[in-house]
Length: 492
Image (cartoon, rainbow, N blue to C red; front, top):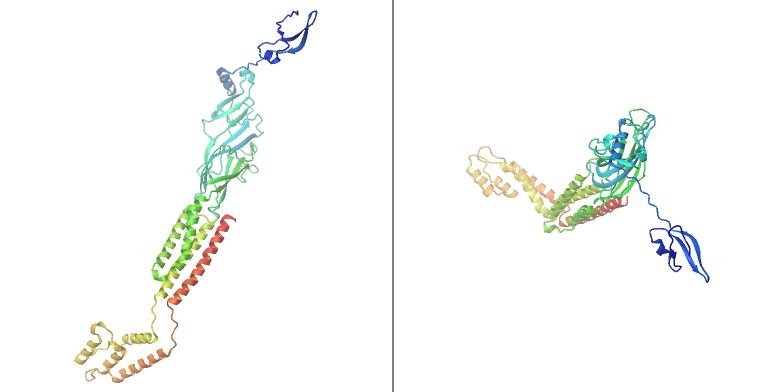
């Protein structure tokens, strides 16, 4: 047999190594091979050692408090965190967007919910972690450390600092601080409404230092795009692309030759047009069709003018709805608004043309003789001869009574005959030659009028032809304007 100083286990050569490895202590594995005369012990250099565990020292609340007191004992947050004050503090900025609340086209304001990650190195805030229970990181208040004076430069409603005073900042043993302020920003976004509602807008969010120049602080963009990991989609706008770059206004510094450092995030937003197609584009297309059908409606129905005026009022309503959404600016003009203006103009012309068509349609046709007789009667009855009345004469009163009986106007021939029979024995006689001369002139004028060439009659046939011509013109203009507007809105 073999003797051992340490605990030894005689192992059956047919047992597996795994069964031995599962035990808690290590063994020197010996394989015993029986021989004819004696037992020989063959040792193998296979040693299963007991695994060693590293027990880390945990920091206590006393270590955290002591570290805090030691760090901020002589710390001044008003001093830039560099020992050489001629050096610039380097800020690393990253943008994270959570949600796009709204893009107000009328006021040109973009409302977003986002947060930033800002990191920098503070040369006065570092420690040896072994002295404080291997403490590698603590959280400090914003009021306790130096923070950059960053704010949103293109804000629409007043300037506000980033974050709040109760927000905590991460500080590690190397002196690196990580600040992640969240903010709901209302920024100015100059919109281009030319392709509304198939438009896309580029809106910028600019974060800039208010007083520090590039000699005291340098802003470095950590990522060239906005992080959209936690982004919640908007129902009206799609966030198509994003980009982040360094930004510095050209004339924003109070010192000549220096610039104010900052960063700019650009969001490209594309409108989802399905709602506007259903609520605006399709109704306008239907109204343009009705505008054409006004000229196809028969003139005898009596509803031609009603349909034309109704379509005109409908275009006016849609024009007011579109104008309420659009900003009052002349920098860009909506193609849809121009298209609506064209349709509104065509609708107004259709109303005017309908009035003309109905006028010619209901115009009565008169013969040439009837027209001449009416004209002569009008001239004679409006003349001085018709108004002659002799006082103090029974004969004259009788004649005057016959002339004006029942308020009816006698014919021209009867009028002249009555005046020829008037008694001239009374005072103030009317010369017979006057009446004869008047009768001669009237007869001559009648003959002259009858001898003239008759004018061409403009009635129902002319109205129908005019209606057909206007139908073709309005149809061509409507289709042409619609096709051009759709091409410009979708493909331009």
